[in-house]
Image (cartoon, rainbow over all chains, first blue to last red; front, top):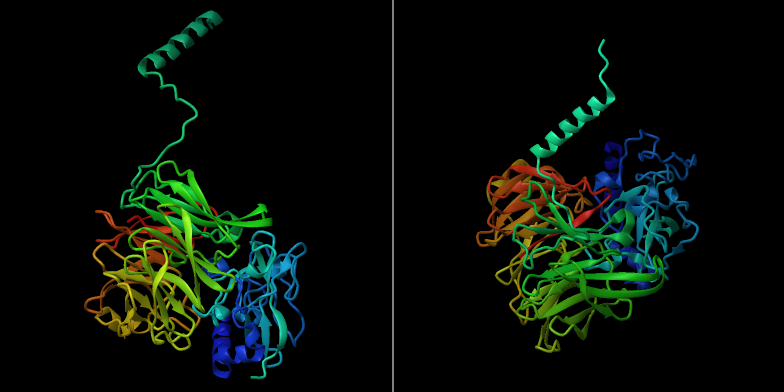
Length: 187
Length: 390
């Protein structure tokens, strides 16, 4: 938990220092305003994260570690403290048959999403991450991860994670969340 | 060794059994089928605990709970799945669930309803279909489904992401209006039959409605909600027609909602001795349902000591009691565990109920602050929202 909190804090401060929500909006263009927002929900940290797995473990009991072994994309995408998840809130698709960039078989990737900017400790760059939901199958139930660094209240829906963003899919039933790199944040 | 004849043994056994039967009256025959019912008007000690059912979102429910009971704490439940919303009317003896279904379970044709349940039988007595597949699906929260103060209308928040409010006449069960919200979210009672809503530019809009649900007045305040620096939580309580919103930094924003234009009051930090303690200075509201009120109009706020950025949903270990008249924190409750939602029951034996991080309900005596018991054991349920029976 300490490691996670420390990382989280570092990321928050980094993001807060070097970017703004308005910057994200500008980057993505006005056309997307109102359609960018995070999938899913606040759940207690106890339920959401169990980072007891040690320095290299994902922290989830019964979930096999799967580190990238890539120093340029470091960490374990099945762990809540993986760098891309700085704004995620939901079940990690990496634990549900999908990956950070693809949905599990049988689901549909939501066309509208929330995006965040996360610092990659591997190269020191900030990347724009799109948290597309995967929809059409009931809750995955594994690897619940809740981080609210970039979350604002629902009065600004494009930056709120209390909304089910499967609203843009054929079925609004939520399964899990991805964390897709869609660009560098040059702002 | 003397052999006892088998016949004697049987006789002896029979006598023993007969003796037993004679000592205890026969248990009464129990008629089947049998299903309990509840009182038409629920005791004010009760609460509704809405299970978002995060681990199976299509299958949520609302538990009806008596937090004062030592034996039968859960009285019953109604289904409320797929990011359902909930409200209730003691006067009409009805419960309202806003819900979404698919014709083939998780897939197929979508349909949205307000399902109206009878308080005694917990059976649906009416279903009002909401057209257009636009009912908002969010983490469960009170302000997504509200009644007008006079109890005539039920307001349904829609989000596609275009936002609107559908107006349901609870007398006739007719949908009488849909009011577009220009970038605004959630519903707060305003006056007798209207509502207000918070907008993305930091302002608040309000609508007055006539007895047919048509808009007779539309109002917009100057921006007062600093969404970048210190946003208002979307949760509020209303005391004497004034809504009190906590902010991320721990200030309280009053807005008078007596009908017509909302009157925005001064946003202030809470004062008082508790506020000035070490943990008080750095405490911030945190959790999901972070604010509620008691019967006397005192406001209760869930607080997290030493809160960091991004902790606004992480839950708190203290509850502060805020006197809206004086602006001061007048009492503090220390919770048994970190909690995400709070509610106060209104009966003669009031309780503070908190949804713990482990997703059970902690029950505290409101007068003494003593932690009396916990209610849980409901598997992976996630009761995020609590509603005191009025």
